[in-house]
Amino acid sequence: MPGLGTIINVSLILLGGCFGLLFGDRLSEGSRDSLMKVNGVAVLFMGLSGALSKIFVLENSELTTQGTVMMTVSLAAGTVIGELCCIDDQIERFGHWLKYKSGSAKDAQFVDGFVTAAFSVCIGAMAVIGSIQDGISGNHSILIAKGVLDFVIILLLTASMGKGCIFSAVPVAVFQGTITVSASFLALLITDGAMNNISLVGSVLIFCVGINLVWNLKIKVANMLPSLMIAAAWSYIF
Image 1 (cartoon, helix red, strand yellow):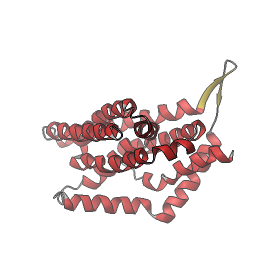
Image 2 (cartoon, one colour):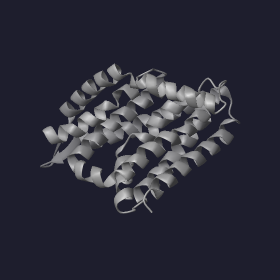
Image 3 (cartoon, helix red, strand yellow):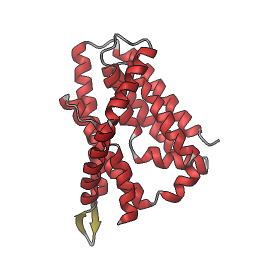
Image 4 (cartoon, helix red, strand yellow):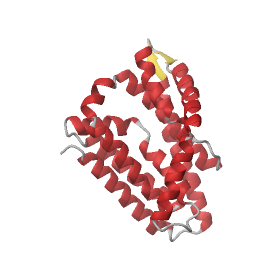
């Protein structure tokens, strides 16, 4: 059944969020802050390991680098486009809309939790590849594996940042569902080179999410999203 992988993925996110709420209510404010920092470190290493696995390659028994120029140009150009389009502001407005529609008007962390969780589970090669396989062949294995990872991530984030994290299930459902429906068309367009570039730049964006969590900064990761499209286009141009 095409789409079942995304349904399972979204269900595991919701389940992880529910467990996170039960667990988080028993934590003190200091414990929640410590847990958020720990989550940030974990997200940092997720992004860092993903990026380094694409940058460093072994050629003739020597360790060399690749993709650094592509990564730099994609991030710079994509961020300019994102700033001009005010993507971050639009996503935050959507987060505020969800906040009031869900009866969470008094939850000060709702929007930050939603945005942080959404980028932690939406950006990455597993979401793209898994959704394409789900749509073409009904192979759900990648999305189920991703769902297990997302379960743990959302459980921990919800415990430290509140129920806004649970609503990350919405963009996951829309993003992966759209790819699954368009899988036959996208499979012809997304080459291995494009997927590698998307994975590298996506890992950098995940790393930036980790920076925001650990050091309480405000890197506008949403405004960097066009970098993924530029990274994919790079593989066709060069």
